[in-house]
Image (cartoon, rainbow, N blue to C red):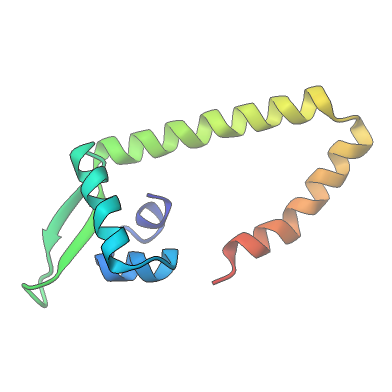
Length: 104
């Protein structure tokens, strides 16, 4: 869902490649997301055999809510379990960790 939020529209094969899973596995994931109402499917303007997947309004709202809840939980956990010095280490570590997460 994050990739769809970031890229707006992707083909299932592009999603599978980005997630480093098989097309069959991505198809199962997309079918589940479709059943939940989190994605929409549209036929490509350039090739009618291909589908473009995007997040529905419900998908965007759900992703935003999950991210917000996760961020709130993490901030609280850091505040309540780490001393100020450890908190500073964590904030410094986030820069290289973000680079790792963004690596393709």
